[in-house]
Image 1 (tube, rainbow, N blue to C red):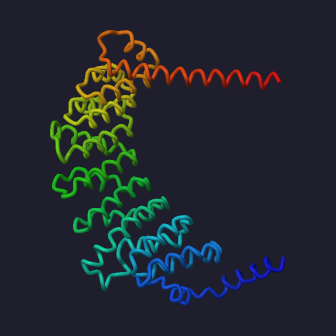
Image 2 (image 1 turned 45 degrees about the vertical axis):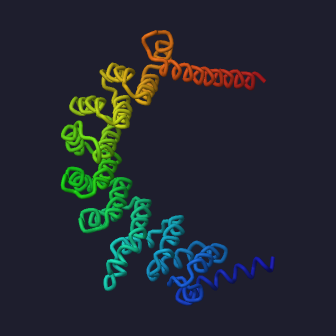
Image 3 (image 1 turned 90 degrees about the horizontal axis):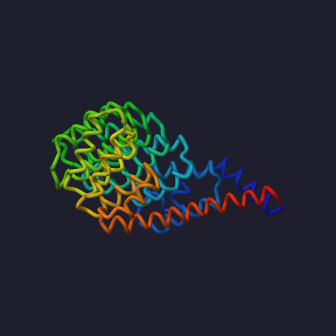
Amino acid sequence: MLDCLVTGLSRVEEKENLNLELIANKCKLLDSSDIDFAIAKIDSFENTYDKENLIKIYNYILSNSKSAEILIYVIKCSDKFRDKSTLSILLDILLMKNFANEASEHTKEMFTNVRSLCAKAISNYKDTSSVTPLLYCLNNKDENYKIRLACADALGKIGDKYAVAPLIEVVKDEEEKSVYLRESAASALGMLGDLRAVDPLVSILETQKGIWSKFTFLKERVIEALGKLRLSDNERVFNALKDSLFDESPQIRINAIEAIMDSENPQAEETIRTCLSDKDDEVKKNALIALYNMIGREILDEVVNEPSYPDILKIEAVSMIEEYEDTADDEEYSKIRKREDFDA
C-alpha cells in the first residue's frame, strides 16, 4: 500500500516538474553519440511516465533531435498515441522546418527515411489539415521520389477529395521521371474512389496498350484502381479491362480478371471464360477461381467432366471441390451441433 502511494506521489511530481531538457541531456536523446543507449532509455520511459508525459517527452525529442535513428524510433513510439499535439511536429519534420538553416544535400539524404516515415505516420491521423503539406511535397519535382511516394500513399489513406486533382496530374504526367510515383498516385486514386479519376486511368491503359517493360507495374496499379471504383455500367472501363486480358504481362491479365469479376458487368462471365484457355497456367487458374466466385460449384464440375479442359485446370478444380466439400461438411456439422445444443 505504501509503495503504491509513493509511486502515485512520484507520478504527480513528474507531471508538475517534468524537466524535458534535463531528461534529454541525461539520456543522450538529442545526439547520435550512443544510439543504443538512447533507445534503451526511451524504451524505459514507458515504465516511468504516464501517457501524458510520454507524449510530452516524445514531442520534445521530435522537435529537437538531429539524429535520424532516434527520430525514426520515436516516430514509431508516438504513433501508438496519435496525439493531436504530435501531428504538427510530424508535419514540420516532413517539411524540414527544423533544418531550414542547415539543410545540406547530405542532411536531406540522411533524413529521407525519417520524412517518409513521417508521411506514413501523418496518414494514420486521417486529418484533412495534413493534405496541403503532403501535396506540397508531392508536387515538388526536386523532392526525393521516396518522400513523394510516401506522400501519395498518405493522401490516399487520408481520403480527402481535395487530393484527387493533383494525384490525377501526377498519373497523367508522362514526363514524370519516377514511374513509381505514377503507380502510387494511381493506387491512391483507387483508395479515394472519385469518378474524376476514371478517364485519366483508362487513358493510360489505352495509350500504353501492348507496351511492356517499365509501364507494366503502372498498368497493374491502374487496373487495381479501376477495380476499386466498381464501374459496372461504364463500357469504356470494361472494354479497357477486356483489352488488358491480351496484355503481354500475365500479372496484368490476372489483375484484369479480378477487376472484371468485381465489375458486375453482364458480359463479365463470358469474358473471363475466354481466359480458361490462356497460355499461362496461373492466368488459367485465376480465371477458374474468379468464375467459381461468380457462379459457384457448377464451373468446377464442368471443368472436371468436360474433356476439352486442360489437365492443369482439372487438377485445380478437383482441389477446389475437395476444399468446397470440406467447408460444406464443416458448416453442416456446425448446424447439427447448434441444433443439439438447442435441444439440450
